[in-house]
Length: 175
Image 1 (cartoon, rainbow, N blue to C red):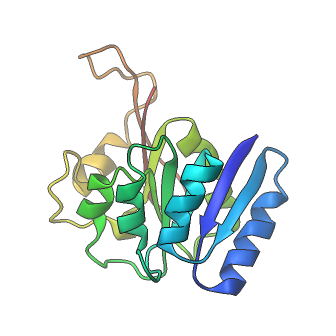
Image 2 (image 1 turned 90 degrees about the vertical axis):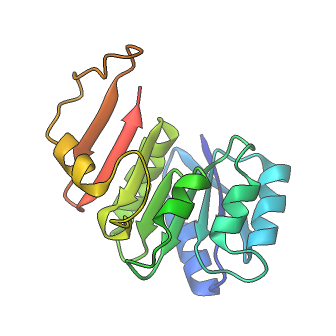
């Protein structure tokens, strides 16, 4: 069972995402909170597998909360309404595993949760800053998407996966 805490300051969104995820047979929402401080406290107390957070929340925003949870073992997914806000480098530094747009179809959030739990990192391409100083920029990621899962990175024998999906997300993972 995938245990999930959701942090969202808009009550309608919080309840809707919680109800949607509770419909999945392999998912259980164990905590619903309305700000970043409560998210950090709930993750420490409830020890979920995944914490889904809004980017902009009172008391502690999603990035601040993700930084506080970096060593917790909980995988963080941050949702935002607006693309191109210039947060991508901070997302990477906070070890956020998913950075997604709120207007994505619900099936994509559900699929992303499962992939992230399996070790992938999923970032909506609209949210990747071109100037970010990350080791994989958008052009490199899109180019790498042409590789197949059987490709090896050659250094440690780990399988490096990059694949596009219909949502124009860039999905990366190491197996």
